[in-house]
Image (tube, rainbow, N blue to C red; front, side, top):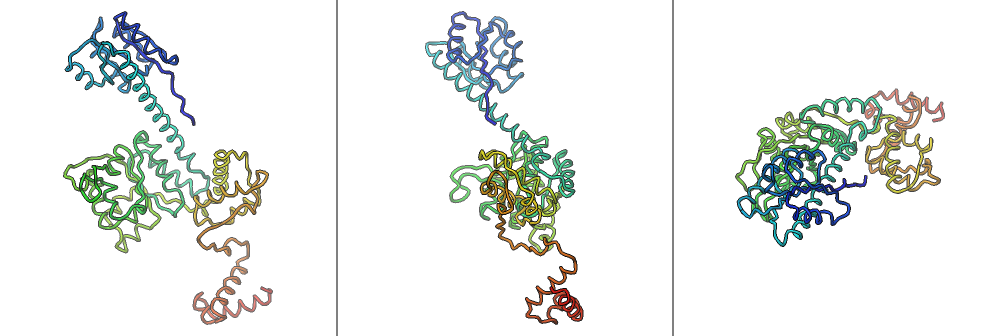
Length: 454
């Protein structure tokens, strides 16, 4: 969505007729500016509900001081830039007003016009930037409404929705598990942007993507000179996420020695940067994700048991795409609509045959693989209809097509027996041992297979 700024509204608060004309002239050099003049402080205060973009304010007014008006403005909206324009020449007064939140202080002299013009433009640009950031954040929040960003109607995904609804009500830690490509970061963002921390930062860290010797610095920061290459102080991800959410992806890849420090940081809610002594307190919501079974990692000694329980919180297991039934088609349609819109491809449909082909595939790469398949099919199709041949599976993992063939249980057994006999050079004893059945059963199956012409 293209950002469209609000009209620029400038309040001029001034009682000197000469400076009213000057300030109004400068403010109206841009014909898009809406300028209103107030000769008393109270008149300005009474109209703050109009939400001016910038206010120029005289210090000496008939009814109150500029400091009083400034205080009222900041109480109403602390983000409104206020430019003091006054004949007050006291440095102490100027410093005090700047401390109280004035954007700039301009004395009334021969340079007032030029300085004011620059100050208004700078303040206006800053105000527009803040407004744009707010609007973009609202768009992100809308995008990650979990019932819109996580598509599906299957029982498996509805169980996830129920857990998400509970997770967003509190700041409890959330641990997300699932195969690679199931959408763990999308779920983490959905939790954050639907929680009371949605206006605060969401900071994602992929533990597996950071060299082991840099993870501690990345998470907790460092001081200048803490190690070779540390040319300046750097905040870590926990500090960056303060007030918001930190998402630790692939937490199961963290070195067990660093796990101890992470545990202490999470318990104490404070950290010390590498090479420093200052204790930095923080307040973050923690969400972790992994494709590993952390309970098994604890059993094998690769993950600390105390950290495991600290991070468990609400466990959310994301189902693989192959277990989500017709969600495959719903997600495919969503990806197709998004890709078509981004590339001006028009309205593309998926044929019945192509849909059936998608439903008989197990998607070892999950949602991420489905997106890749649909994007390619949209490019390759003719007449805006994706046909069966446009669906290409290029999985790096071997796909067991046997499981997706429609056969009777007897025919499945025949297939399995024949596969093992071929594998072990018709050694019936070996096959019987591998399948954990009697050799007489193998001979019986062979007889039935011959009679059935299999």
